[in-house]
Structure formats: structure tokens, C-alpha cells
Amino acid sequence: MGGLGFPALDPIGMKVQMRRYRLKEGTREAFQRVFLETIVPLRQATGFQILGAYWLSERDFLWFVAHEDFEQAEAAYYQHPERQKVDPRQFLEALETQFVERLL
Image (cartoon, rainbow, N blue to C red; front, side, top):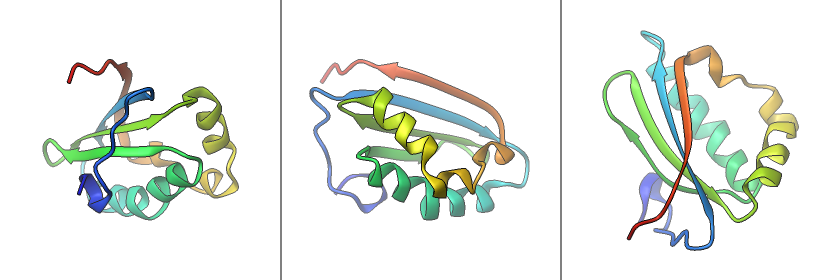
């Protein structure tokens, strides 16, 4: 099994994005609830594969998301009515995203 209880996935042929967040002090529990209850299900509903999600420290969070047509799926995700009801940025002090290239 992969991260978050999902099957391990092989992202060959998919565009993979690393997302790293630095949370505001004291927001970990609320962020984690929104992430698990809203963000993950919506990403999956719009065809994304969650490759893993990790706590690096109390305030640092790292996760990887993949899709064959990342830009189109990303637009659908952000336009989804359920996504527009939440704003995870309220928990974030800093955000870094970067597409990564598979080595192994």
C-alpha cells in the first residue's frame, strides 16, 4: 500500500508535482482535517493520483500528486464547487510547488 492507505502507484507517463507547505503555528490539526476530508477526495475525483504525503516536522508538510494531463486536471480541481468552499492557504505560511522528474 502507498501513502494515506492508497495502493502504490506507478506514475510513469504522468506529470508529478511536489508540494511543500510550511504551516502557520498551531494549524496542523485543522490543516490535516481539510487535507484528508476535502483536498485528497477532490484531487482523486478530478483524476489525480496521490503518490504520498509526509510530515517533515510539526509545521512542514510534503506531498506528491500526479496526473497525465496535469494542467487540465488542475483547472478542473480549482473550479470544483467543493474546492471553492475551502481555502487551505489560511493554514499556510509558505508554499512551494515544483514538477519533479522520475529517476527510479
